[in-house]
Length: 221
Image 1 (spheres, helix red, strand yellow):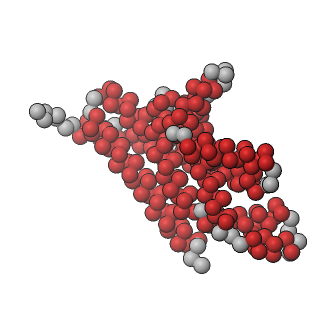
Image 2 (cartoon, one colour):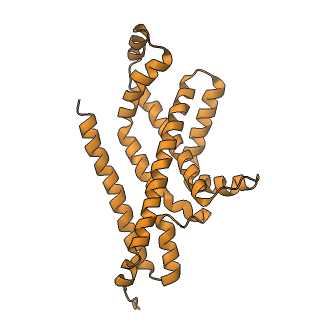
Image 3 (cartoon, rainbow, N blue to C red):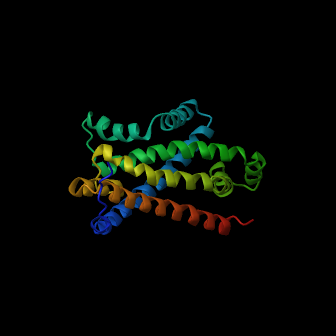
């Protein structure tokens, strides 16, 4: 009944290609976080602006990002925009989809972090002659990012894992895509995906441990 023959040597021969795919996975995850954090800060400012229109835009973004599947978001970027004549590469579609998701979750994390910062700090900054933008940039935002550091780490891990959803838009250069392509050629399903799982695990654990060490160094006081 169990007649599967393991061929680890054959699968390990594919390790260099899988590591190349892992680099693409990291690249997409890092870029999506940089874009996501930037947009999340803007969305947070929209929520603080007092404008119903800007606040509504931010709230709509957050609601869609947090209450629809990430797979749906990536699919809509690639195929939904394609219906309007906007054709994006699988790489770009995956990057935009993950960044959209990151921005929604991080914006809500930032909003929660802001509630933990006393308003007196902003007033104190204003009393020193800072403009509202300067007060946010130099006083509020550093504290907001500090409070949100660990949630941002969790989102980075999630972004790494979300890259595997690129398969829905025919992304074949990331770790999951390369593994799927190798599997279609060699049919060594268990060995290849077991190796891919170990690589994913090592990447996410490295990110988590690095973030903890960085947090201990930066936020010791």
